[in-house]
Image (tube, rainbow, N blue to C red; front, top):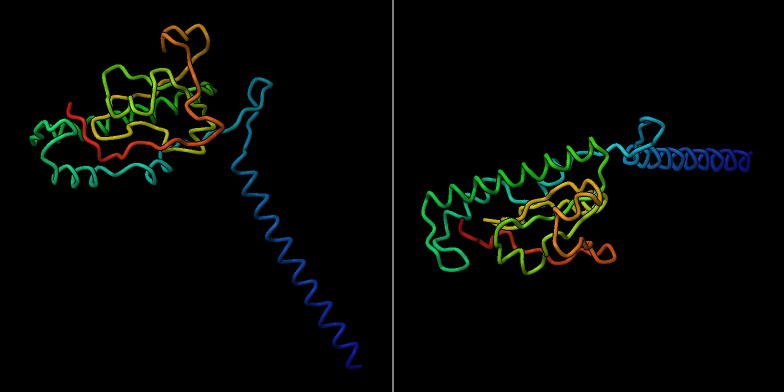
Amino acid sequence: MFYMALIGILFFLILILLAVRFGITKQRLEAERESQSVIHTSGIYSIVRKSPREDIEQFKPSEQEITQYLSTQTVDIHGNTLTDDVRQALIALWKQNLESALQEIEEGDKQGLEFYYYDLTEDDEVCDEFLDNGHFVTRQDIFHHPELIPPFHIGCRCTLKCHHGSDKLRDTTEFGMRPFLEKDVLPPLPDWKRILKI
């Protein structure tokens, strides 16, 4: 009788463990399915892209952080004086460039575009240290590394543009496009606190 009760308890515990394992496996599979959702459009399956707006907050300073930091700084990387007007302009430039990059990605997602290139229309000594005009990243790179979205530092002149195909290649860079990530390795990005006066 004792052995029958013990076998019953063991059988019951095994059933509980199997149910817990099944539940965990099911949750993991559902989470993977959600992250790799697909939609059917014109006979082609394409990945449903989630905007990087929420994820970017983990990698970029908030407006309050930038404002607070700038209030303690008196000069940029060249020793140029930072007035209140310059500080406000730097904050506005940060917000404008970040919003522009996010909108470019969202628009590219609507069009199913996979490549984005960096465009340095003005001199930017900070970005020149790690980035060339026309370096490109894939949408997958951006998904895995939202920190690849500019701006990279206060006063950053770098913008992110959709690449629409080889017919636009001459518009992007004189030397040809090259991948920014080598073997999917994220290079060191500049400290956002480096200030380049407008």
